[in-house]
Amino acid sequence: MLEIHQIPVLSDNYVYLAHDAASGQTAVVDPATTDEVFAALSDKGWNLTHILNTHHHMDHVGGNLVLKEATNCTIVGPRADAGRIPGIDIEVGDGDTYTLGSSTAKVFDVAGHTRGHIAYWFGDSDALFCGDTLFALGCGRLFEGTPDQMWDSLSKFKNLPGETKVYCAHEYTQANAAFAITVEPNNQALIDRKAWIDAARAEGKSTVPSTLAEEFATNPFMRPDSIDLQRTLGLEGADLVTVFAETRKRKDNF
Image (cartoon, rainbow, N blue to C red; front, side, top):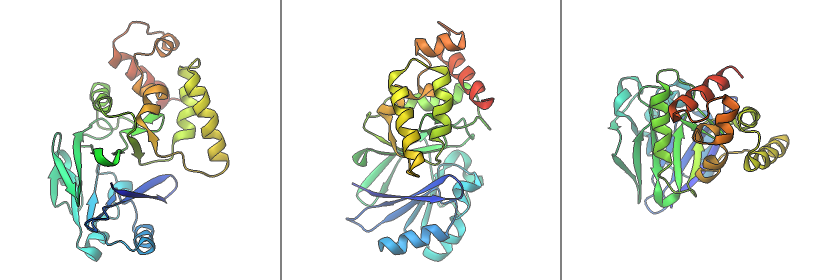
């Protein structure tokens, strides 16, 4: 299994180190910055061998070239958006696998936030690196995609085990919870989770990772089939994409 280390950077980003002890290989996922990454590598005594990028936004690829120059690491990123991934060496897409030491990730195309977004699922480590597609209690804004694309992308995660940890890229959970409770106010699991989140943030604690099981039970963007949600939106019986699109629209204006 991978040892995963979370690095908070910028105002609310999370960068991750994923270390395979058997081989000594270490990947950094979506390095927004470099100083904090170098410090964490030094503290852990790990050597950087890979960068795994999910999409092209600068708060995910900003450290690529500096890290590559310093370590000669291999940069892996989305085939569908290779032209916007600085220093990319290996292009991957939906259904591909990529091996880090003794661990293998399955790659998913998860467009919506951007046109070429991907996610990496390391099944043996119960780890999903989903960038800005799925957040704890949220999902990414649709900057380059459509509601149909994003719902299709999120639906791919529904086939993964509930114990999978969601290593998303931002600490947005408290704000997401404040919105979620307005569209699914009778969801007791969400009520309980929001209370836990508020307490954790009051103590300065991270709320990430969550698990897919938690997202299935409480994240409105994963729950367009919820009758409570549909009633709140005035969309009882509507198709799932319509419910998802209205939920995303309301969050954009929340």
